[in-house]
Length: 119
Image 1 (cartoon, rainbow, N blue to C red):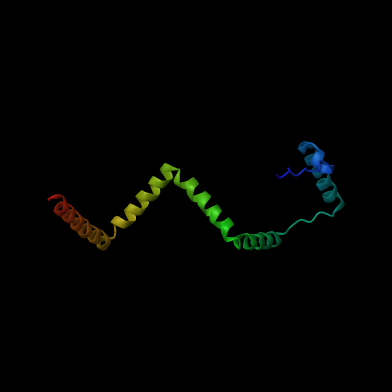
Image 2 (image 1 turned 180 degrees about the vertical axis):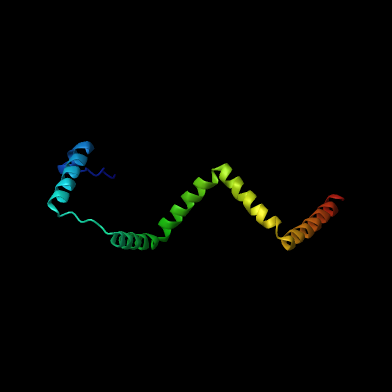
């Protein structure tokens, strides 16, 4: 039998989330006013973001999950998927060699279907 783990309700954990946010805000303001807060330059922020991204992207399972979620979300948008299909179809139909090959392949498939259903 596994007993549930009791969580400590001391300090910030015991406070209302609004009260915790209020304390954090006042601490941030105090640090800014006293000059102890660090303001990132654009370069520092870029470097920090890059470093964080590199660390996260090492976790292949996490990246797969993110990609899967994004793919599922976008594929549920029927208008977006239709636009992608039209765009791809337009680009493909301009390529005469590809269209000719598809036409020949389609003709062969139709002939095979006629032969198999003729019996």
